[in-house]
Amino acid sequence: MLTNGEYPIMLRITINRQSQFISTKKSSSVNNWDVNGQCVLKSHQDVKTLNPLLKTILAKIDLYLLNASESGAVVSFNDIKAIVLKVTNSTPEIKAQTLFKFFESEIQRLTDEERLGYAGAYKSTLNCLKNFTGDKDVPFVNISLEFLKKYEAYLVKKGNAITTRSVYFRTFRTVFKTAIADKVCPENHYPFKSFAFGKYNNPRTKKRAITKAQIDLIAGKEIDSREDAKINARNYFMFSFYCRGLNFIDLASLKWENIKDGELQYTRAKTKEDFQFRLHPEAIKILDFYRGMLGNSDAGFIFPILYKRHNTPKAIKYRKQKVLKMVNTQIKEIAESVGIEKTVTTYVARHSYATALRRNGISKEMIGQSLGHNDLKTTNIYLDDIGDPVMDEMINSAI
Image (tube, rainbow, N blue to C red):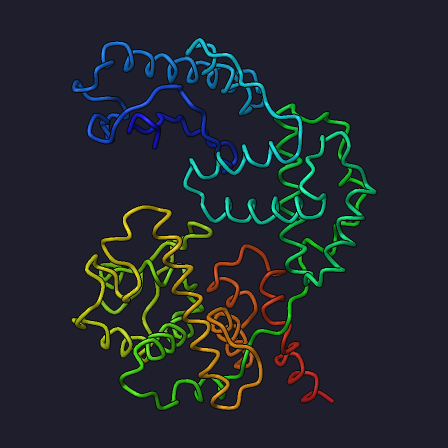
């Protein structure tokens, strides 16, 4: 929201499934915006000039796309940005030439687009880089291969796990590529080209899965009926396991309308992929526990996590993070109380679901499909705990 109480009118451009937002330098309140018509209503004070401007922008872009299609030219974000700037009589903003300032501009862009998860990852990476340099900003042209190696050594010395280092380095590299694309950094200056990056693409993680027998121990643990937090934590964990490794972020967003004719239908927040499958009987029992429960969500959510008061993307994000932290604390205590030595979190349910399927002979391809994986590499990471029991059985029975 802007200082005048209105929201910026942004143009979303999607090329090859990648989206960027371009500002029209205009704004409107929610009450003055026509969602269906994608224009301002007559009640907007600048309706006579603003709507023609928006139509002109779209017409110019349509013409550009048509010409590009006929000539076989490559459509680019920068070309479309240039069209918008020309129509709105704007001049390109002078962009930061230093790492930290550009990082901050990217964080602001992601925040404006309500991509708060990515914004959080960018903030964490920026803070880490600031600690590394002693809060001294660095021009892009001064970032060398030696800089990257020293930064890596710094993270290793701090005791950061390879998964954490992977997040930092992949985010750093993405920002660097964006800076080159935005002409902030020279195209021929790309130190990551000579950096040994392979180990950070698919880092091997600590074994996260537990056995079905251990899952059953958690499910059978007696919990005092007064310990609501512990009961909820176990229910969320078990619901995730019985709903094909449902991620906690998606679980928290489920509404009763997502349950139809004994099936769960939802869109995964991370990948925007749609899922629909018949519910396991144990999952239905958990749903019955919350159906009509006193004190449950007043906003139509299945689980008592999100309420009407969580009415902004930021409030929803922080609420989910807060509850997830509490749930992981509780499920860890439950696991320890039944003799499970491994650290158990909600994410363990997802890995354990995949492991249980593989131990029962389900193909990796089918497991990956049920998890929403785009390639078998990710599925193999999930199943790394157990090797390949199907292959073991086939080989042992053949010799």
